[in-house]
Image (cartoon, one colour):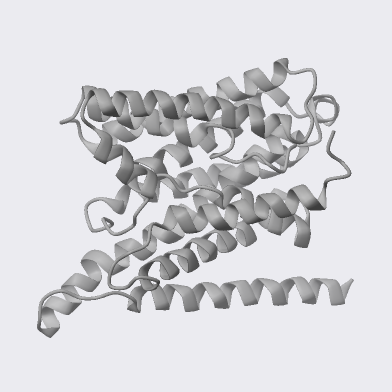
Length: 320
């Protein structure tokens, strides 16, 4: 038992060390503009620091959102980009840019949260009406809904001349992160606090409605709270950063292989892993075609698709 605890602590220290190294590399990577020490320091605090903070918080938010959705649906393939939540947030942003173009970014964020919350509830409602809930049916339903919503967003973008805005949103570049824009991401720390408070009940909810009710958990209430926290986190990230796919699929499945499903004991792990993966992908995006930037969403999609296929192959005998 002591050896097992020592091994777990060692793993946590390794992830923490990797986090520190990746943060330092993120702060040191890139090309400065202008000349002079004062200009260099100003640019560092105005662009590098906000970008790194945005990467860390966004990675944490998307990893936690994926894990919560997997607990609520009892399915390893569900995350914000496979259940339609991200696409609904994008639709909300397109509507806010199209119909309220001069509104502040906070208002746009609120619209994105409302749309993502409605989309998450729609997905859970459709899921509750399905008689056959095999491993693949659940994410297929989510991706089908997400595709329809994405098509509506594209139609709105074409109609209102917002195609470039939609394209920028899909690419999810952190290049625009600077002082005055990234601060909304700090609201995600409030979401993390509530997730920590509800962690034990969210874990019990993953056992199913009957078991959770027998253990004294209000299943419907926790389902509502879990989906609401997920929608808020996804809505904030979608507004400030853009579409970040597959972090919520990669991290929870890696964590499950190492530590299991206890959300409360795994909270620090999943935040570190989500931040580390997004930091590493961003570093790769900044260096692969330097001084230009490669779209980080493409890198995440390649990694996420590989993990998706790995899970399919690993669990092929369980699929129906």
